[in-house]
Length: 367
Image 1 (cartoon, rainbow, N blue to C red):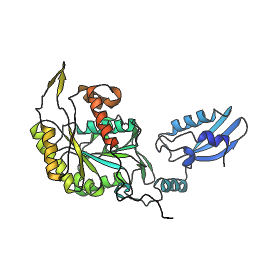
Image 2 (image 1 turned 180 degrees about the horizontal axis):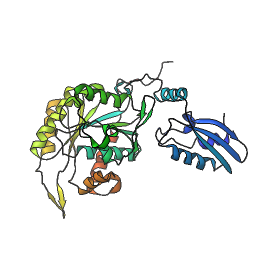
Image 3 (image 1 turned 30 degrees about the vertical axis):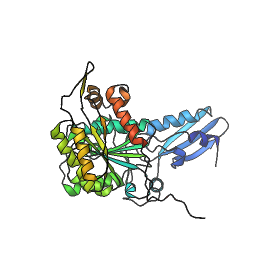
Image 4 (image 1 turned 180 degrees about the vertical axis):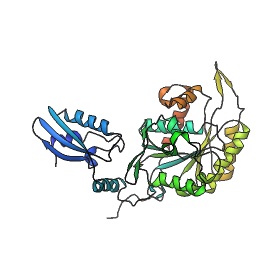
């Protein structure tokens, strides 16, 4: 049933779900006359963190058509929440891994490195934000369980909202993010073994409302341990982006990171050499040596039997470090800096690769 009030309410977007509130069953009793309107707004849960912003947006929207606006904030019943979560899941069962399905078109990209300290997480965070800035729908899964840093890199201080068994991930810079860091208090260490690690990663894929994504970036832990193996099993269509530095010691270990992906079925998207050089008054200083990225690409090409390119050489950047510490991605805060231009160019290259349709159902039926 159409009305002036419903048309105005349809412009209000839920900040967590990114759908109009009229599509989410959030409109309760509604009465309107020519100049007055009264409406009930049903939040998904009691204490919803988005309650104030939703109420503000509702009042502002209705004020465009009515001189007197009354808004009452309520909470959905259990049945209403269940209907909503069923709709969000697309009528799929609980514990459903959408990214493992043949018809799913999301490009899953593992960002890995052989060792820590090569800037993998900083690159992942900025790459995700860069892709989102181009208009793509992007998710970021922080799979570095023991060394999680993505929440801080993106300045996220909120935690996921839980609607029954479905988690709504925080959104930063238009990127949906999930991390074990959201569930650990006071920076306590995570001391888990293999089965618990696998279960946590599985829940991040099945219990989180990701929606229809163009890209899911996965920040892998360094090395070739349980998490990398579990993700390889759970996300068989993923591509691997291998991060290294020019240093030969880092490069030799990075080869193993790409090689484990080949063993679990991932194709190599390419190699990125970080901290390639330092720009000093027009002169390039090769603090960590040269050739690491080329070496990794060459070795992975040999192992895979397919062409593997060195996609980017990123300069050593203080701006990248400062942005990561402040939770403000450098691709947004300093878009014209050398590091930002290089990451944005890498994001453009990745975005230009079409989604593969081979073997996927197009939903068409013969006449």
